[in-house]
Image (tube, rainbow, N blue to C red; front, side, top):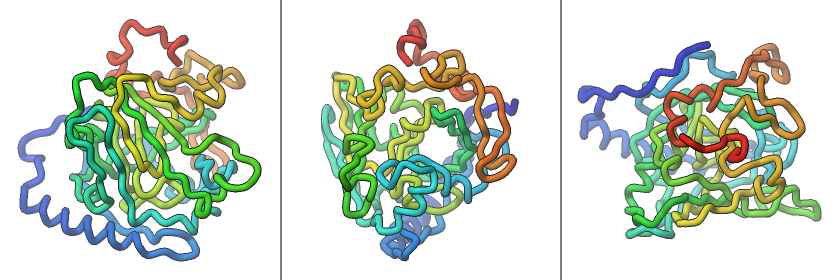
Length: 313
């Protein structure tokens, strides 16, 4: 199994101020280009991002599979529904409100988010449904956004909320609603501040497609994919464990933590192995053993020292 390379940042790798400022201007232009739409949704804008030592040495999942096989129930319950039904979604203009137990609550506009120092990080992504991908995300550490609002010492959790736009998101309209809206998620503050946790604004060198959570989504690579809340409009720091959509809908199947754990099965299927999408055809793949914490145990297992991970699933 390919090894994960933890970050070792030397002083010469720090982005010079002049380069950062030029990239900041470019990011603003990229964000502005997201205003363009077509029948296929937002037109992807190229992004520049620093290479990162956060990566896995495994073949990337083909871009066509990452953008056409995924879950985003706001656009429908089928794997192809997000790509097929997200053409009318408008990811710009956009703001994320960050509030709660912070000294400096703030609304961040899309231009400010896109101007953050961006990195390309190649992470494994493991769905709770026992399929997986390897995705080259572009984003920045969630901790860097949290730092800007100065969390209070009483804050222990971070709550997230997705946009509600039934006129643009057909899965949120009609008589049958598969989930309660808005979609909500949460992390412990130490999980949110972990260096692996990022807010993604792109993949494969371009801005996020609508179907993958445009314009900004959460990526926590050691947790099941449903923790990666998409199209975020609100982040709240709190002292109480926040509700999460799938835990509310099926608490016996989906826990708050949702750490990838091959030793703890879903009530309806085994989690010991996974199907790697894109290897063997669009709907096919290669079966492989699932790794504890999705292969990131060395980096994150200490967060759960002394916890019963079967009870805290």
